[in-house]
Length: 213
Image 1 (cartoon, rainbow, N blue to C red):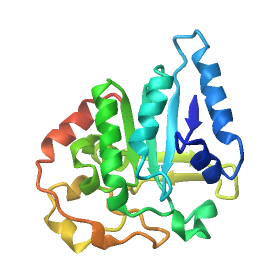
Image 2 (cartoon, one colour; image 1 turned 90 degrees about the vertical axis):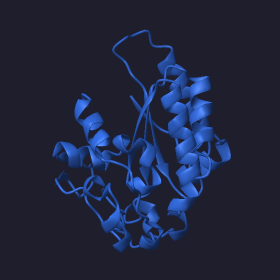
Image 3 (cartoon, one colour; image 1 turned 30 degrees about the vertical axis):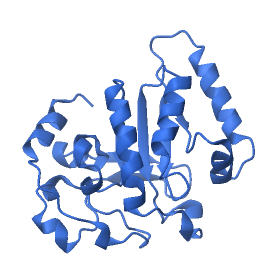
């Protein structure tokens, strides 16, 4: 089961979903899922990173793990400013430097507690410590594709290219060949935020290839 929760704070969650009481309904859903005695059932939490929750991602992770210890996997998707309400709400796209510290704390907490996670649309220079958990990096390293079935007019989309916008600084980055770069279809993110990192990529590639998923 995948449950979308964007903040542990009820006021922020309800604001982001545009539905009063959505936080309470999400908590009730998790309570119900926690009561199911079936070893084959797993519960994942999906979070869209945006301006209103990017500084408190670790707070949300800690809250959910402490209240619902059966949650073992988290997925973060940095906002795609070219889709949905984000197209007309420019204030929702976060600056990368605003999410970096909180995301790092959240990833370290999950790693230390034996949980797993994936991060999408965040360049490796903002998550180098856990580069092997980047969705784009994993697809690039393994040479995989992704097929998504949308319920609207987009229909079925087959994605084979996971490399987005790069900056001049990326050319000197040791992780450039396995980094998806800056997802900027909405033209709202700033390439000037990108900076090179100088860590070996071979251990990252090896860890990705050794994993089953």
